[in-house]
Length: 406
Ligand SMILES: Cc1ncc(COP(=O)(O)O)c(C=O)c1O
Ligand SMILES: [Zn+2]
Image 1 (tube, helix red, strand yellow):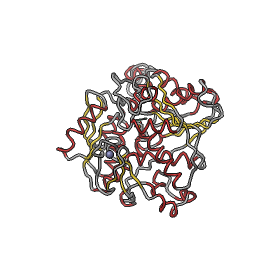
Image 2: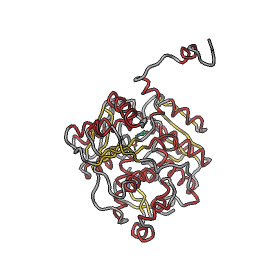
Image 3: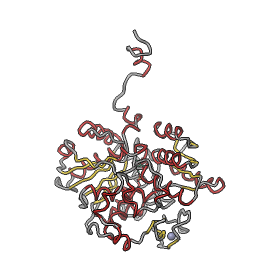
Image 4: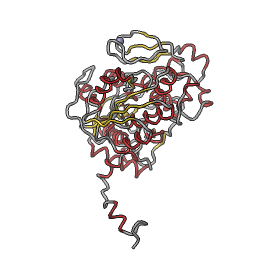
């Protein structure tokens, strides 16, 4: 264990770092703290590139010790400069951070690699998670790699790919007639009696540590010069909170200055609690009734860390913006055909949002802009099929396939 302590993000209370922990008694998420003054003298920016080509190149600011690390090669994903898309939407300096290349096809691999490594370190054997889909796939994979027992609760209309993956990885899967918030309630209710460690986003302190490496990476890949704006598809918002934490840590390490990108939280029109709270100048969001969107990861009606997301967005001079499902899928197809990157609808939402914020003048055409594609489009056949309907498979077979040659 390399952290010095855990600190409550709400009341500031400190607690020991080397014991299993969920929320603070006050309900606040706990954040991991390190002695960055010591680390800055032992670990220089120029030494980072000696590390592995994964997020564990930042191991000195991650909590797990070397023996505990459970890795499948997560992180160190490509940051691609767009060739045609930027010109189309009027952005001269547009980049895509492609998280679809992670194990299990989404950035969730980062958080769960770190969280499962810490389970190993702390002797936790049984874990449970409520998930919109991709976090479940990642948990199932890392639990399998670590030999842990995983219990997964997902909405019953979760994308089929996520369901199949979880089953294949050998997790115990329950499909719930409800949203991720209902799944979270079941885990909270049943967990203690079943002996499950609750690995819900922000209810344990380590997933965010994995996700923050997206912030370290974008800095390193841009030669330690942060971009002007970062677009992040916000469900729970943990990626954004994590990157914001990473920037503060890097400044304390002396790696970057005080300048920050505008943090832009992108949500779906059918589920936009953070956008609403931002526009109404609230510190916290309220439960978003009737949440619906094809971007399963954005279907989070009341993020636990809403106040941290809103804080990051406001302090950075950023904004929060919603796009429709149609706009997302349209943008996804545009990104794929312009750049060869097939994005999850969540990632594609950033393309649609960037187009709007350039058109309305919030961003300048010369700004250096990074869009986070948080997952692979390959996991969303149901959503993209609405754009490209085809004849049923049985029909295809009849047209000269191997099964029924004519
Ligand atoms: C592909 C994808 N993008 C974005 C998100 C939202 O993540 P966060 O909780 O960091 O806001 C999710 C969450 O499920 C997701 O699966
Ligand atoms: Zn507290």
